[in-house]
Length: 231
Image (tube, rainbow, N blue to C red; front, side):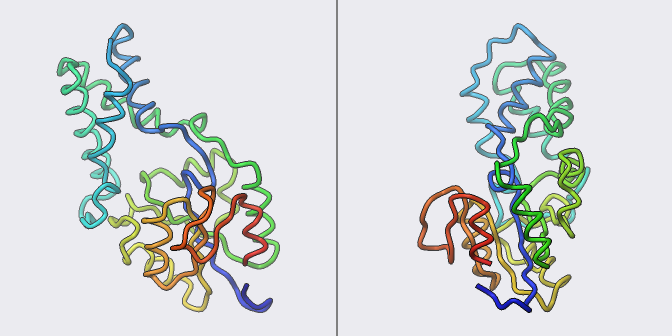
């Protein structure tokens, strides 16, 4: 626990940490092809297999600062298109469905905030700590936070698809560290590799949430509200 007069910079992962989404990308790819071809016979498990690769966070060792924002989406659309083709979809339908995935992903109905998320974030702010988002995610995450009604709870939003680096790479952690040079940093997330190991290598204290005990983390919390006892 830090001293009462020390500012903590709480770096929050989003998906799986603050909000829960059930097979977000696979379900969105499913919904997109259902819109284009309502009678398709594609097995959801086959879609799941296609989504196990092809995303920038699957290869965090590769920097892509030259291909962020719209270019990131262009690469994703190509991945969706090729995935549909591999599942037997014709080229025209595959292209239409691939282009539909983006809008579906951004729907707030895909996300359920964890029960104590809003109260915990509010209380952290009241205590003088700084909440920031540090997420491996798509470029429009900040807009989704706004639609979910929680953007005001964060001072900064740092997203991999805007920076060109994925956690656990040091560069994405450095973005926040440079903005708050005098802070004590905590990385809070549900991924041991991206959040915990990455955060520790970046010199941050780490809090693993929703995953039970893991020896790599400095702290583990079953509920987000437990974090207030740690900081």
